[in-house]
Amino acid sequence: MDNNQKRELERLIQENDTKDQTQSIKERNHSYKLREQVLSLYALKYKQQHKSMEAMQETIKKECGFLYTEYRELYEILTTKDMDLGMMLKMLELLGNIENSKMTQHESSFALGQMLKEMYIDPKINQRVEELDDNNEVINVEPMELSWKNYKIMNMK
Image (cartoon, rainbow, N blue to C red; front, side, top):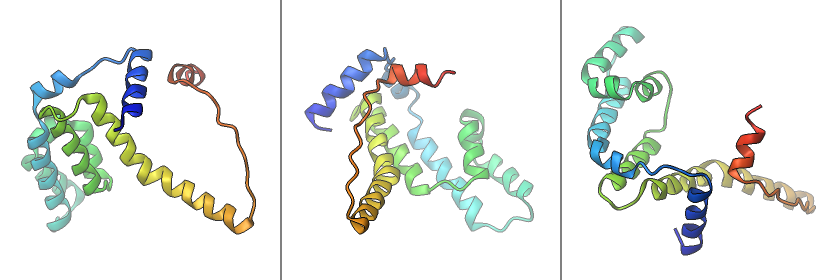
């Protein structure tokens, strides 16, 4: 994160009255345990043969009790859907960086946003640029000035 990005992040934090949870995250210190449980869950889910979905979930529930009791929503996502393990481990690494005082909650959130942008937005932009190059057309679209506060107001309806 460069200095301009840091200033912009600070401005957004102030503008939106965002509460800093960094200390709370440090006190919980769950990243290592979560990483162990996620890796166990993936090993059980993909490397073992199970008689049924229920049998698999029962085995995972026994082996990954911490994940099941403390992070139920994450547990449900990991057992019922396919989530990229690499991305999950990167998110847990960011959590560990907060716990080890390498980053604040907001810096970590920024880093995650950058990763997601690179994964989902940049490829679409590049695809669109390639399409425009093929047609030899340039489309100028003025960006809309929109604050987070105004975005929330617009989407509360």
